Length: 100
Image (cartoon, rainbow, N blue to C red; front, side, top):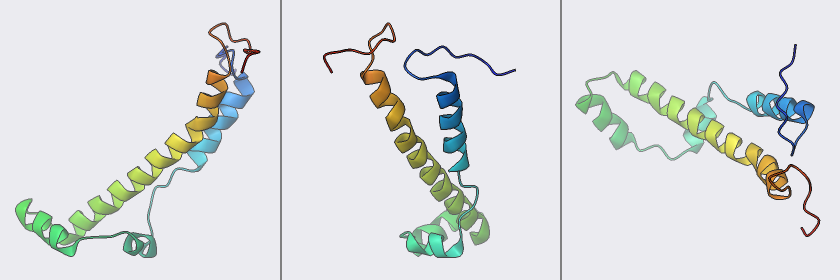
C-alpha cells in the first residue's frame, strides 16, 4: 500500500514520481574520463597519501567518491526546484494564491 503524504501543493503520485526521478539520477561510480575532466591536484593526492598513510589508490578512490557525492548533491538541488516553485505558488492552506 502506498503512503499518503497529503502535502496539498503536490499530489501523492507526483511526489512519488519526483522521488523516483531523483533517485534514478544518482551516480554510484565515476569513469576515468569523468575523473580526469575534473581538476585533480596530483600534489594534494600525494600529500594526502603520505600524511594519512594511505595507498594512493585509496586516496583516489576517496576522491572519486567525493566527486560522485558532489554530483548527487547537485542533482538533488536542481530536482527540488520544481517542488520549491510549486510550494511558493501555494498558500499555507495548500490552495493556489490568485495574486501570483
